[in-house]
Length: 512
Ligand SMILES: Cc1cc2nc3c(=O)[nH]c(=O)nc-3n(C[C@H](O)[C@H](O)[C@H](O)COP(=O)(O)OP(=O)(O)OC[C@H]3O[C@@H](n4cnc5c(N)ncnc54)[C@H](O)[C@@H]3O)c2cc1C
Image (cartoon, rainbow, N blue to C red; front, side, top):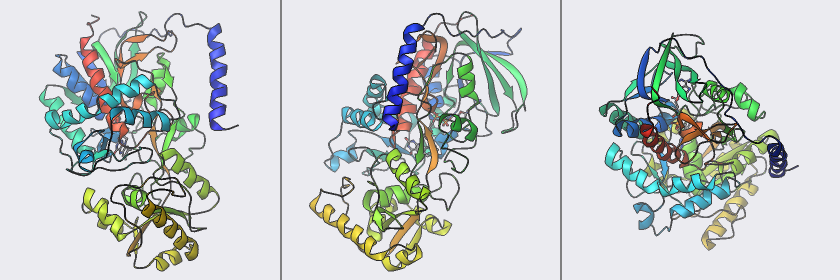
């Protein structure tokens, strides 16, 4: 049974059950209230990444007192190691290149590539907010973006993402934190959230935490109860680094797969959210980054070559045959599945490009990174195509034919054998020196998560109604990306929905 039909079958099954068990009372969760709260604030935000900080800023601007809790010794989660690309349809660089784009086109791309699993209203809210959110990063946060450069990511129908000036999400997250602190929000590091306290009346009233927690030492730190007068915002990110939990959802993702995530991307809050009756949707859609290299740990840097240079202006090749095996600009699932299928047959796959492609792309968008890749040994340079073919035992004739066919389609502007489009400025491949990196997918992103409504309120699994006092945003939530998260759209999701959560949680009435 195909993946799509298997899922349709399961959904049909659960709909039938739903008619027998109509939603009634809230999920049963009556936590004992602490005898005494150790501390009280209006809003507690769990997680100090893009989403949590965006939420904290807006809640603080609306007048709420805000405490941000982070279990790790440093702030930023996956956001601070992020590659700094953001989808901005209608940006000035696109206009200069004559690229037509719109929030509607981005929404279409997300829904199509996500195999229709995205909640359309959530997608539309996010894409409509894309340009204003980018403006917010510039005007309120002071984030700097590379001028006149627009990047192409797999699954998008046009090049549309912008690059932060330092090629990292740290440019955004550090400026968010600076503004949040300036506005008076407090960030507490090494503070592990253990339990969400949901009272018998259904409301979330606070958290049980452990201060002075030492990751990953279970049970470390001092227990404390913190009351949230207005509410709690769950911005705890994904679980890509948690092998046991990710295998519950996708048993293929064993420990043999490395992850691009920070080590604290674990599942305890996902489990806790289930315990108190939050509805978690689509958690088995877990994305592998197709462009990572086995010659370095974690996310690394080879992907910027494999994706940014070879993916947009070069080709990906199966070393056993010398043939291309996938559209290098397909979405991440299509590409990761193709590489994994080849790897499982014992076929190594590489991304390759010539000097021109490298000069046109990463040399401009990420100055200095090419040398770093070569020094690290995750990208390799060869004077001739013959030398590269010899090193990886690629049949030279097959490889040359793949390049000739690609060049012929590029010259025509259409008819590529893998069905790809050609990025503006792409030139025929041909002049050495040549570069390549080995491809080995790594666990990258959790598309599913907490169901939230358009106000970013978390939905109760039993009643389908919002859980009073509980909000969420970012990778902890589901429903935006569906089956496939497009590159440059996670940052957008976190910033847009983090801000929505912050504005709305601040409007809550105090329960005390
Ligand atoms: C290497 C890498 C590069 C990426 N590059 C891009 C990109 O260029 N563009 C793009 O759109 N997307 C990118 N992504 C995806 C994107 O960065 C993430 O989806 C996004 O950063 C998630 O932000 P967040 O605020 O939801 O969570 P995070 O930034 O992960 O923050 C969540 C925080 O919650 C904390 N936390 C978790 N549990 C607890 C607990 N029990 N108690 C207290 N704290 C807790 C975590 O330690 C973490 O710091 C990238 C992802 C990775 C891993």
